[in-house]
Image 1: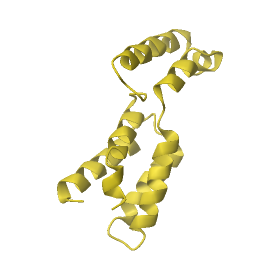
Image 2: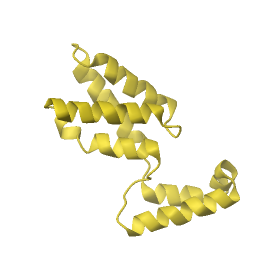
Image 3: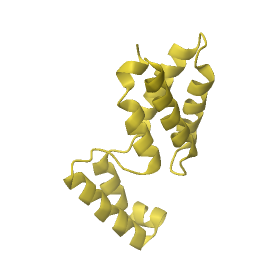
Image 4: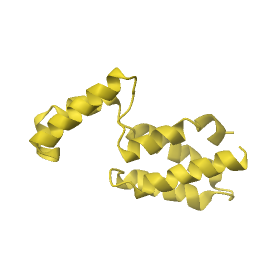
Length: 119
């Protein structure tokens, strides 16, 4: 991986950590990966980081189902849940595979470089 590619992934990792929608486990995996860069633990931290990102990224159909559920209405508020579901349907129609919240967007960007990370 060249410097520009590494810098891109590091930047997206910082975005992930700073995202309000990022869960604690993903933040911890992201920080562990940053801390391991350039060390003997980098490969192991990279694998754990990728596994966490793959587990946490929200598929668009899951977002729609959650936003349209009673749990989604309770979590977001009824009106916000309705708006989130409508937005999710709109981006799905445009080709989105994943939620576009800041955390999921950062996950998707990082995972698009998965092959580089695993080299």
